[in-house]
Length: 114
Image 1 (cartoon, one colour):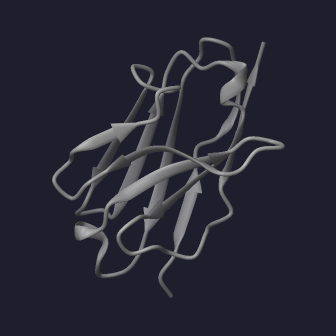
Image 2 (tube, rainbow, N blue to C red):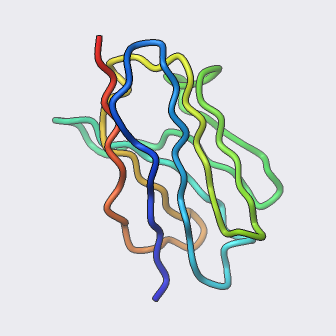
């Protein structure tokens, strides 16, 4: 079954850091544009960052300069390094493919306290 499993969330104070991990499956991973999304309470799920098979990255304006997306095709992993976290970063973070979408995983909760 093709799926993604997110991990690495937690509770952190403002200014802190977290590293999220996403384990993916399937034979198309290496050519799949992979992305991190987040769902903040009361809002729609939004795109946070994506990374192409050639490691070209793109970020939402709200996270530029603070978050870094990376991937390891050999391990079928995608990471999101989050620094200088703010309370408004609180939410459930999901990863998914953009070229070849997976079923949505459970996500991982990130809570940033003020």
